Length: 131
Image (tube, rainbow, N blue to C red; front, side):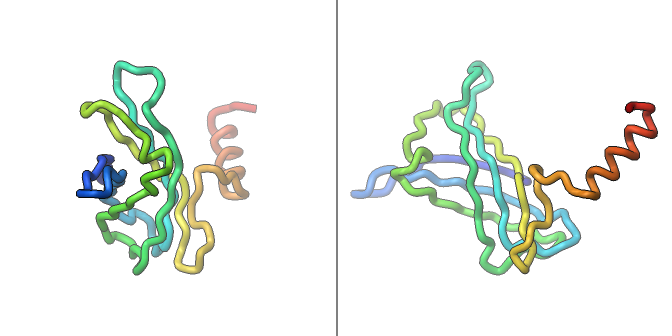
């Protein structure tokens, strides 16, 4: 994730619509066809965010390793994104939760703890003397 921005776009006769603008770069060694994110709109002086939700985006032509792109998403104006009423100084942070490869299969996920991760954990526990 290079940059994230959330704003309400004022459209004549249609009212405001939420816009999520993301500048991303594929730092993996595989092409990416879909990315899953968690976005949070918060203010530093507040313990509860103004809004927090997950969303995903299918990248029409994919994103090859090393490529970057700007994604403009327009969530439904009647969704919770359309109800956000955060102050102008609120900060929008986005984390990548999961990436799919060109075949639609999961490449990476923060929620998966597979054989590779189990092996790495065992290796680290052994290295640091943790049982």
